[in-house]
Amino acid sequence: MTVTPYEDGPLLIRGDFLLRTPDGEIIEAGRDTVALCRCGRSGIKPFCDGSHRVVGFRAGAAPDPTPAGECRLRPATGPRRTGPDG
Image (cartoon, one colour):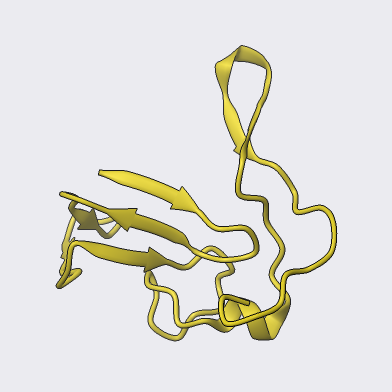
């Protein structure tokens, strides 16, 4: 399985994975590649519906190493992308 965070967009999950609710119930993805919402505004959570474009969601795509070996996403920098991917 691979997880790819897209700048200002969703997490793209590819491969063999299993999604579960916090209560442990399985969420049927129905395919081998899904986009998971990071902005919190999707109408089809946990999946992305493109709402991040409308609400101006900003998040980095590359990991930012932090102390103690933890990892977080860097904030987006530079001009906002335009085009079909948002």
